[in-house]
Length: 421
Image (tube, rainbow, N blue to C red; front, side, top):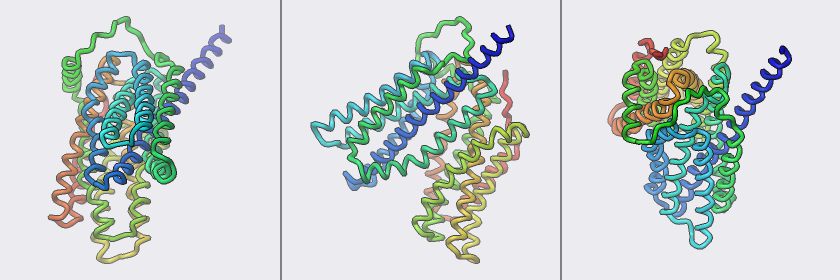
C-alpha cells in the first residue's frame, strides 16, 4: 500500500514536471516567434516603403488585434476545450506563415500580405495566450502554480529582450521568406508539443456540459461577473493605474529626457531599454521567496510605491543635469531605474495573476481575465496621447514627477487583493 502511494506521488510529480517543461518550450516558440516576426516585418516594411506611417501601421495592427480580440478569446477559452484551442491556434499560426511563404513564391511580399498576416498572427497568438492563462491552474498543483507563472514571466521578458535582437540579425542576414518558413514550421512544432500536455492534471470535472457559444451574451456575463466581484475588479484597477502612470511618466518622457534633454549617446538608450526586461526576469526569480515572507497586499503596495519612486527619479535626472553632467553616471542611473521598475512590475504581475487564476471559477476564468486585461490596456494609449501632447508644453521633469506622485498616492491606499469566494 505504502509503495503504491509513493509510486503514485512520483507519477504525479513527473506529469507535473512534464507539463511545465512542455508548456515552457511551446510558449517560448510562440512568444519568440511572434516577437521576432513583429519586429522583423516592421523593419522590412520600413525598408520596402521608407514610410514611418507604414511602419507604425504594422505596430498598431499588432496592438489593436490584441485589444479587440481579447474578450472573444476569453469566450472561446471558457466554452471550448483549452487544449484543442491552444493546439489549433498555434497550428493556424504555422499554416498562416507557411501559406504566406507559398504566396511569395509567385509574387513579391507586399504591404497587403504583411498587414493581413500580422493581424491574424497576433489574433491567433492572443487566443492562444488567453487559453493557456486560463488553463494554468489545470496543468499543475496549487503549490506549483506560482513557479509556472514565474517561468512564463521569464520567457515573456526574455522574448522581449532577444526578439528585437534576433529580429535584427534575421533582417540583416536572412531572406525574409526563409525566416517566414522557419517560423511557420516552429509554430507547428509548438502545436505538436502541446498534444502531449495533460490539460486536466488538476481539473475537477463537475459533469456540466459546455454551453454553446454566444459571444454577446457570454461577454456580457463576464462583464457582470467582473462588476459583481469588487475585489477582483480592484486587482485590474491596479493594472489600469500602472498602465496609465507608466505611459504618462515613463514610456514618453524617459526617451525624450534621455535623447533630447540629457543628449546621451544613442547607443545608451538601447542599453537602458534592455534593462527593463532584465529587471522583470529578476523579479520573477525572486517572487516565490518574497511571497513566503510577506503578504500579497504588502508586496503589491510596496512594489507600486517602488515604481512611483523610479518615476520621480526620472524627473530628478533633469534637475540633476544642471549640476552634474557625466554620461556614464546617467547610464548607470537609468539602468538602475529600469531594473527596479521591471522587478517591481514583474512582482505585481505574478502575484495578482496567481490570485486571479485561483479565485475565478473555471467557467468564467477566460472571459474575466481577457476583459480585465483589455480594460487595463485601453488606458495606455490615452496616457500616451496626454504625455505626447504635454511633453513640449511643460518642463520635462513635471510628467514623471506628477505621475510618480499620483501612483504613490494610489498605492498608499491598501489594495484589496483577497478575492471574494
